[in-house]
Length: 361
Image (cartoon, rainbow, N blue to C red):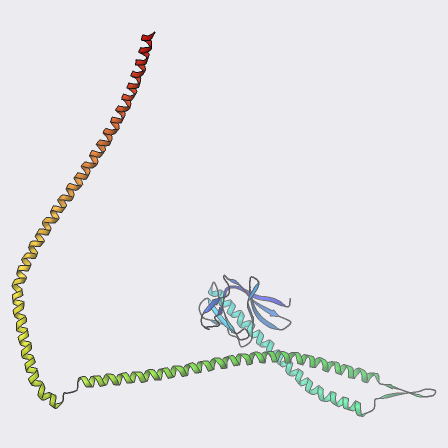
């Protein structure tokens, strides 16, 4: 295996709810081991946590990531590749601090690895740019100029041989160029992967920004509608207040005094009648008060009689209970006497039979 654990800690794992993007969903029922790994084959640092047989966290650390401590024992980071946000709840604040420091350290290491790969990629591109014209120039010279010859005079014909040193130089140069091209293609593939990831995250951010702008526009429209409605209600209230405080017209002002005097006289008469009726009722009220006192006294007498009757009933119940007990005792004694008499009668019968037998003999 190409990965080795560098640091491990126990924590409760959470993931952000993809629907609301606000609530946390527990990814583990209990605290699990969260470890930092280094993949030597890919030169990447990863955070991995396994719960049972399932990988809860598989996050590749990039230089753009940030681990944020939201409370004394909780921290989180966003993974654009996994399109989620991971949260970790630790048992102590010290464990959270250690994990945060390790995260920063491995993030810096990932940044250095990326910079080295970029430098290597730039060197390979520069080498390719330098080697390509030399190779093309050498190939063109090989095409247009005759190869070096070794002339060996034989007895009847000339034998021509290509130079071995030229063949060795060309093969080594071709191998070197192939090696450089392969390394360049690998780095180019890694860069294309990073570029694709960045483009995907950028498109997601643009979509989120567009949604936020749309929601802001909707809120602005609703706010404008609320303001219009408020202004309309204020105008209506002002109109009603103006109508309630508006002076009467001249025609009504001439007619109103006569009506108001008649109404006042009618009200005075009505009040006089009410006063008379109240005075009449006052005497009736005194009589009613006396009747109420009499009824109250009768009620008290009845309650006292009722209490006495209840006491009598209780005494009668006690007497009845005692008489029932005496009756039960008497019945039991009578039963005992009857049993004794039965025994005596049985004995007398036996005695009579025995006497009869003796007389017969």
